[in-house]
Length: 472
Image (cartoon, rainbow, N blue to C red; front, side, top):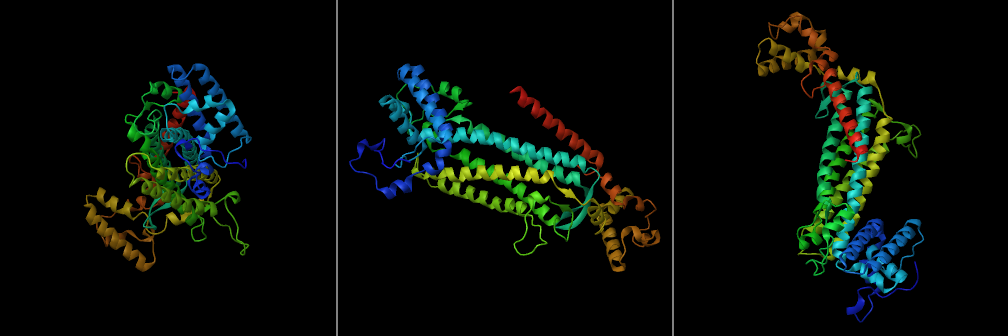
């Protein structure tokens, strides 16, 4: 940065200099500099519209556009020198433009305010980032589907209350997270519709008397529509709060996956082995292999939750319309985007490298009377009301526990102590594999049904890929 602070572009009404501490306190350039591409993109479109409308001479518009393009390349290359007095990326670019092409550069701000300019920048930024996040979500979904097909014959114990409940296919478990991510993608796609509205031309809060063609500017920038109310447009950050909420749900889903993997990788469970590339060691215990990546994703979920509360708190008491408090919207938004993208990337790599202990999972799936419900449903086929069947099997389980036996180990005579209608058919429903494949209802864990789910997921992914290639 240069050593001399220049006069502010807005300093005409002021007779004194801004206190240096106030400059530091109010500056947003250290974090909003990442908006430079979007800021310049918006300014170029705005100037082309101004020239097209004859609000500024077309030759001036062309000079401005050329100068903005040069500034963008300098910032990208790292050659651009920011001034200590630059408050934000918007003023930095405008100041540099005026220095480069003279007073004509000041025409770039015709018909707009920083209020609508920053909102436009943020929407352009978030629109691009949501697109990247959606691609990363789809990548993780594909990883789950690939793993599900690979593990189609792997059985593990399903849990409720962290107690063994019923045996399920590991593929069925993996597809559950694919479904969670599908809802995340749907929410983000809906959010994207509300992000893709252009506020530029709302000016400070009331619009402008100049004959702007906002629809033309929106077309240049790829916005689907323009904002309907200028007061709402400059003060609206609903789109940012909505995105962070959607990101919070996404991170919660990732955290739940990580929680399971952390537990499953413990010696007590031994269900999964994480690749060395996604674990770390202990500074004192040489035998340790810690699931730090999964733990950090779990921890960073709270960070995103905090960003949501921060954003909502910024917005909750603001009088209409724009207030400087809104400068605080960027850091929680940027941090959320960075956290979500990194979490998705690292988890996609980690999930694809997981090794499952199939034998251990199968052994544990057979424990804890996990097919007791199947025995109760067997009784239902004999005409026994389910609530009565539930009680019969509950007493039968208590009998087995007292004698240290499994359901498969007791005789038919013992079964008939609890219900005389038991026959040899009860032994057919007790094996774990039988229980899994019996659950063939839509969305169930039977192999045939899970394969259908996998096929459907693969068709959806293929369809999205073809749609993306077609550009529609």
